View 1 (cartoon, protein in one colour):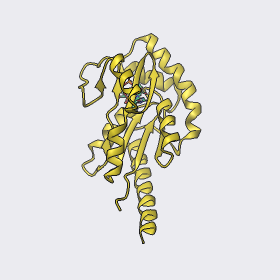
View 2 (cartoon, protein in one colour):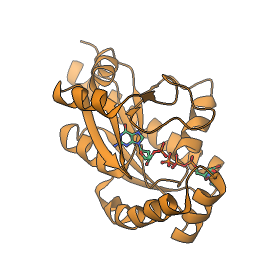
View 3 (cartoon, protein in one colour):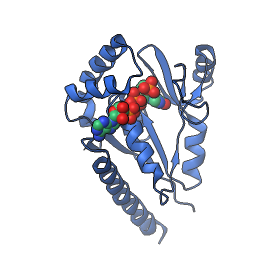
View 4 (cartoon, protein in one colour):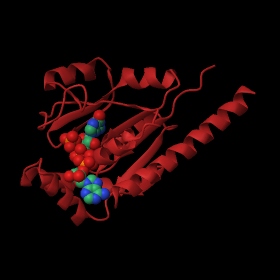
Length: 199
Ligand SMILES: Nc1ncnc2c1ncn2[C@@H]1O[C@H](COP(=O)(O)OP(=O)(O)OP(=O)(O)O)[C@@H](O)[C@H]1O
Ligand SMILES: Nc1nc2c(ncn2[C@@H]2O[C@H](COP(=O)(O)O)[C@@H](O)[C@H]2O)c(=O)[nH]1
């Protein structure tokens, strides 16, 4: 019997630093979990690569995938669809490897109802003012979109209670260390339980 991999979901408001923290986690050579690449109807930003940052698709293509049941979860966020392709998650976990999702709050809570055994981590900013300045500093969104993202964040922060862990992203390196410690502890728990069942 193969032990199933661990599902790790990193979530939180737009601009909190999920992508920054995730990239820092994956820079570590010792990391042996796989990253789930999302699909989106959003246009690529400068420097973003199809199949690496996202699978960039049309609304029509995305809706076909929804109809076909190919999305583990999806959400419409600030005018675009975002979703997690199901087959990659199923295959990776069945092969015993851990998989890491970086998705928004609506999507994370959908996954949690389907896969409550996962590890759900909410990345939180020091405060809303700081979140806005991160979005402004990133320079990828218009002032209107930034306002929408900040408004969405106020609701999203209330949903933190539904997660297994909350991690403050005050300093990137500190947030990375906190998340790595959570993953190490959760892996140990799962493997010890598996050993007992297998005995
Ligand atoms: N701890 C931090 N301190 C200061 N700035 C940070 C920190 N973490 C991330 N940032 C900056 O905040 C901005 C937003 O970060 P990032 O794009 O990683 O957020 P995100 O949560 O992935 O956003 P989205 O959900 O919209 O993709 C970036 O300019 C990034 O460099
Ligand atoms: N529900 C999902 N949300 C996702 C997914 N991939 C990314 N996201 C989140 O969408 C917003 C906006 O992203 P951006 O790249 O346009 O800034 C952000 O919160 C992402 O984390 C997904 O597969 N499902």
